[in-house]
Length: 220
Image 1 (tube, one colour):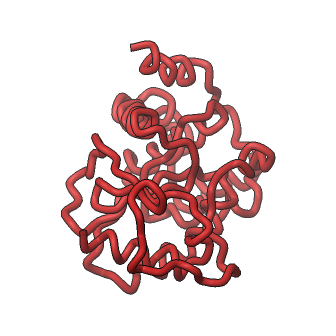
Image 2 (image 1 turned 45 degrees about the vertical axis):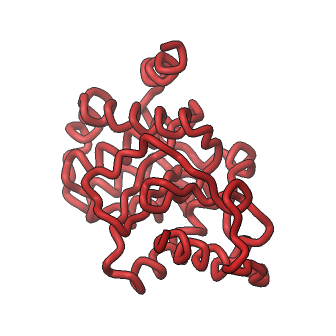
């Protein structure tokens, strides 16, 4: 129970007054996939516990196999860089289900988690790419305010949902529990079919190698 109260504590202490620029020092510790590294993975030699590991208790939110779950943070440069190859892969696989979950395992990720889940709760996920782009450019109060004006979203009502809506808090708690219980400590993290977490490994430093492993795991 003590671990479960950790997120509750973060939620109570977090503020929604503004979105600030990415803390790049903190974000630098997260894992990523480089688009410039040479491909080195050999699909016939993937090893459990080396290239991927089993995870449990992942809520697929109604997605049916085949599907991917991504844990990410809006403010993470690595997640931002990973977005383009991820979307390209999804475009090549229209049959692939996809669930995105915002990580809240660090206190300074909580506000951004609130914003992400409020976007979903207010039926504004069509504007996710625009919101993510604001984070990539460096969020300011001015650009944050302009986002709501541009998309005709009631900002006051949105922030109320972000701060108080039970469903937002439930989604954040669920993300926290899933990552914590499975000892997931970095983002972006991809789970294939709710079972296989791709691990950081030198064989997977290129996008090509990374998604070849995804292909492999989708067939297991």
